Image 1 (cartoon, rainbow, N blue to C red):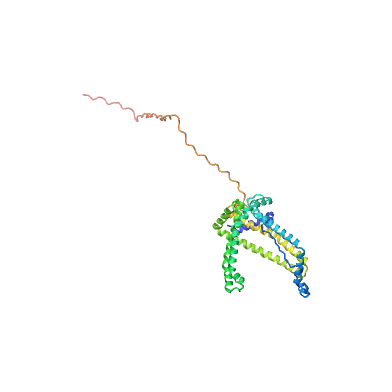
Image 2: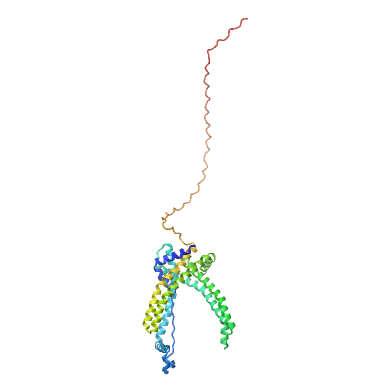
Length: 370
């Protein structure tokens, strides 16, 4: 398989159809949460000691505590709004994931790429896409939590009993991270492959949750080399994108930190908002590009890709449909007796031509006398 060609084709589709960027933004997932807590004015025992407030963090903490106490209703409303927004974004992100797969497939099939069609396809496959993720990641999460509890159990037992953890307990923790961490990492990568391919099975084939997971497992088992090479290329592209994002974030981060130390909080807020919007569009494009890579790869992996003519070649005329030739019927038997064959007419022999004498006729000899 031409893996580099998959990347080029996916980028071509992503750059040509800008509607995919919107789906890439939502498919990347979004969430938010917050929490508040503080100490009321009565709890700020240091207020009576003026010398203890000379330290800037203590003064800021006191101000935050007073503000939280005076605006507790506003904070509760904001937290509720963020929870509702997070739930709505979760629903939209699942639909956007399926819609993005559908639209990239439409582009590959040469059909119109319309946003409404993508949302319709995404919400039709919503429960199946969610079910695939739940079936795969719920047991994995439970396994990871169980592993962490077992690994830290000796340390927790020593702390709860009021004693000091023994060095052997920390050695077990380090060994658990070394061995169990590798197992969880490999298992997590495999589950990621299964989820990525299974979602495309259920969106494009309309198959059920377990049938899609089974199809993805067959794809990985039969074409393992192609899958791992494609995954490594995507990881490399992700690392390159992360480096670029890190450089941009560092530039804005220096400005934000400088504004905070200068106590110009308005400038820090403006720099933070500028950083958010500066990374919004690249994140949307990269989200659409990553999904397009896997969809184009999935089409070639499962034999759905339409073979394109080489560049510059004239399009060939469509072949006429092949009409099967009806079998030749055997000749019908005659219903009458065939006439006897006519004997050929014998040619009469030709008479031989007369032979002409070569000399004058001779007279007979005279009779002899007695």
